[in-house]
Figure 1 (cartoon, rainbow, N blue to C red):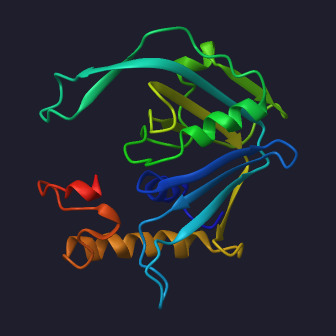
Figure 2: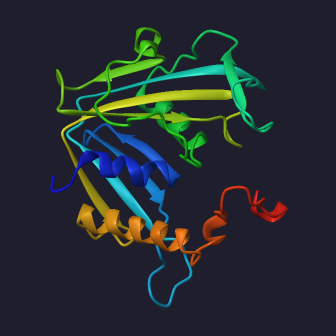
Figure 3: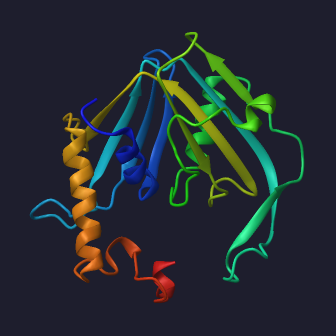
Length: 214
C-alpha cells in the first residue's frame, strides 16, 4: 500500500467523520473525513478526504443502549464512563447498518488502539449484525462511535475486514496516502509551535475552549 497501516490510524483518530457507508455492491466501506491539515491556498475550509476500504470480506457491528457515570479512574470531572443497560439492538441488514452509521457520524478522537489488525473483540459474539461476502481478508479496522447528537444514549462498535485502502480528495481525485499523512503531521508540528492553535476548535492542553467552540 506504500505506507504503514498504523499511519492511517493516526489520521483517522484525529479526524471528524462526516459520513460512513457500507457499499454492499462494491464490497467497500467508505469513510469521509474532515482532517486536521492546512487548508488549500485561497481557502479557509478544513480539508476533507474519503478513505475507501476495498475488497471488503465482512462487516460486523454491535449497537447498544448505554448510561453514563463519572469514571473514578479519570482525574477530570468531564470524563465519563458508560455501561450497557440493555441487550444489543438488532440491525437486520446493510441498509439499516448504514442508517446507524450516519447517526453516529462525528468526532473520532479517542478510538481504541490499535485501530488495525487487532484480535477479535468480545462483542463479536453478540453482534447486532454480521455480514459476510468472502471467507476473510488481510486487514481489519475497529471503530467506536460514541453517542453523538443524532444517536441518543447509544454506542456502536464496528469492524470491517478488507484487503486494500484508497484515499480521495474532496473532488474525487485519488491521493497518495503518504501525502495525506505528511499533511496531517505538518499541521500537528505547527500546532506544537503555536501556529495553528484554536484552528478547527483544537486548543492546547489545559486551555479551556470558548463556549462557541464546544
